[in-house]
Image (cartoon, rainbow over all chains, first blue to last red; front, side, top):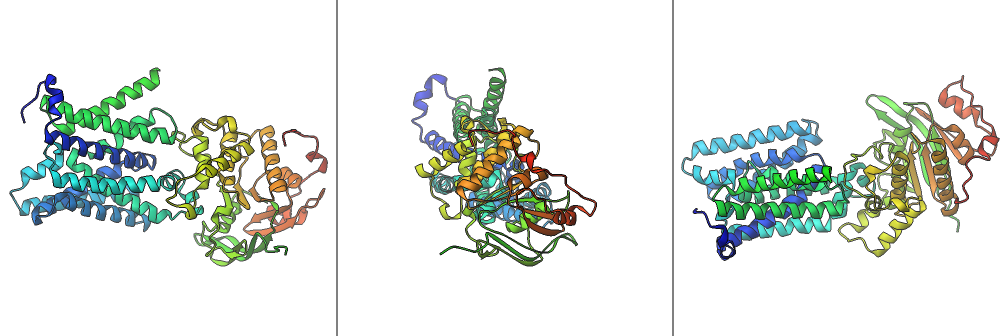
Length: 274
Length: 262
């Protein structure tokens, strides 16, 4: 894609590809920031990395059998989350070991499928590193539908998820169905990862989910303020990343992550120096 | 009609941890309005007993009833407040204010998926006021001292207006003044609001000064009412050993840290 002049910025927003990319990017950033903050506080950030790599197998299977790779990624991610939860609960493996096992299995599945079917390596590459600028109407519709489900769950069960995240035993004693809620949340993690893969790619999805929350935590404010700030930082990184990558014709996902990291470093320094 | 159902009724309770009995064949009951001290040597099973009574640990044998309902089918958890001995050891970076923490006490199965309304937040502010920490309401809980944290957690457990309050070692690390104030606040709740309170404590003087019943736990549970000016020596000996004698004088309860606020 050719680069644009900075002075062309207003006219740039008239391009449909950019409008769709911005809508998709903002939605992915919002749900990633919300889910990501809870994951950080649950000390499960690396679950994202593990499940995202597992999703690689789902993308490959999706491409092989001709279904939307995002759906393939979602199915395999969900299976990975269920597997990790099962291994933890049954004491088969500790949390990090369970993530490692699932990550290796999912990635191996992808490698086997690739070796079986040459021909979609280029497309697979776009899922590894993201391709938000090539998002089409179907992708955007799926993305909006999934985002509505995730945002709806997090809005309606905000207080229950906060109670479980802060004190699982206490929440259980208050009659909250901790196991079912945790399972539902973990499935939403899988959905969020699948949804974000199109935006930022398998390799970097963890950054979109963790950096905004981590930045917001630097503010040392209430949970509500932290959640709002996390959303603002995530959306800002997505917008900056998409616009700057178009202007300078560089990798969108790379610039999104650099923007998020830049905001994090700025806020961390500001909070310590202010 | 007077409701004579005990608050907690335990019969033949055995709880195992690993292969050993942590609580063995114990029977006792706690009446509504009791203010109960749970004492006993370290490792004697006090916390195990509390967790089992709240259904957080499985029992091997026996039965536990809360408010007349078997623990397995008990569904009125909003009437029970509990503060674990580890409650205040949370991640101090967790972004939660005192008001948000206490607000979590209004979350239960009956109001799942419902937004908290004005009544909920009024109850939150009242509970915070009751524990004397209104000035800390918007402060992050990670910034509080141990005593302030403990009071914030008790406020959280009070916000659902419980009939039963269970506190596991709530005054560990308190200075004597803070501890006395804390016990006075609890006595106030017990007497004025009629809340049944169970406290795991190593402070025998506080238990005999302020409480109406003692459970002495050392694998077995020995229960006794506390009548003014007496110490149930037999019960303590069964819990701590034959050599044990607690020199307690009733006057120790008087003339210390009087606070007009309570």
